[in-house]
Amino acid sequence: MKTSLLKKIILTFTFLSTINATFSQTAILSENAKVSVLTCGTGNESYSLFGHTAIRITDAPNFIDLVYNYGAFDFNTPNFVPKFIKGDLQYFAVTHSFNDFMNEYRYEKRSVYEQELDIPLPLKQKLFDNLNTSLASGESHYTYKFIDKNCTSMVVDVINKTLDTTAVVKNTDTDITYRTILYPYFEYHFYEKLGTSIIFGKKVDELGTRIFLPFELLKSLKTIRFQNHLLANESKILLESNEIEENSWWNNTYTYLLLLGFIILINKKGINQFYFLTMGILGLFFIFIGFYSSHHELGYNYNVLLFNPTLLVLAYFYFKNNRKGILNLAFFNLFSLAIYLLILINKAHLMIVMPLIVTSGIIVVRLVIQNKRMLIVG
Image (tube, rainbow, N blue to C red; front, side):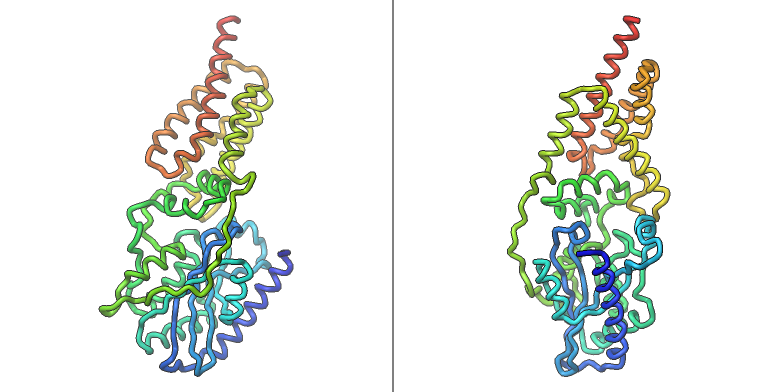
């Protein structure tokens, strides 16, 4: 879908959400009203790999069947890309009719699950009012953060605000890290998994005690109790996708291993220099983005010990045949790799970066052996 069309869709949803909020604010829900949490399945695009969360309010006597979605943003935002990278991009809530919402996920062939909340009518009304007030006042605008502030955490916050207690808390997988929790979502998306493994820093190695993904909320709602009963009824399947995703011919571990194996086996000066340049430039990028971005997940990135910026200088010395410079930087990078391995011993991404560690180690050791011999001969 072209960007211009996406812009029109977002603007249309924003306009419609304002209208819906205006007309719904004064509505008094009937005894037949239902409120539920919708959990949407994962998609093939990078933005949809983790699913989506929304709230549904339905009340047939009042002709209400709305979905409140906290995952919208405006493509017309000035400096859109820099704001997204820095972590200053504003997200906000919009409303959809339930039919329009379902049609979108039917088109994308993504599953949708519903969990009705078992709360009394006054609390349903309070949640409905809170959602509409949030839309109309701009309270639904928030600065997106991958773990701390997203479509799922916003739904958790508005439900807890309505219940006037922190009833919705994470009660599953609290003994594993955020990084470990993320990994199953990258099946059939190897390079996205590799990319997040190397760009995320130490924050994602903390224990995953916060609800930040849609299916974590779905699992938690199955056991959360409120007023001496389960907060949510058994989940229902509204839409189930039977599409089976297949491995990409290129987006998999085999092309990754073949490329690194090629670099090791060919052992050409030009290829080794290109490898050093690529690793060093990525290291500089990780350092820059760690300081520039307010996404805490990108800070304190110890992966720069592997993607070491000093490899750029090593590539220069390699080009100039500066043997003493090569040896000094080669030993420094081998030391950095050793420290990196110690850090990674208990980390979830040890195995996925191990081929890079081995490749770097082999190339650098070869350089040490070659240049030591040349110094002795000289």
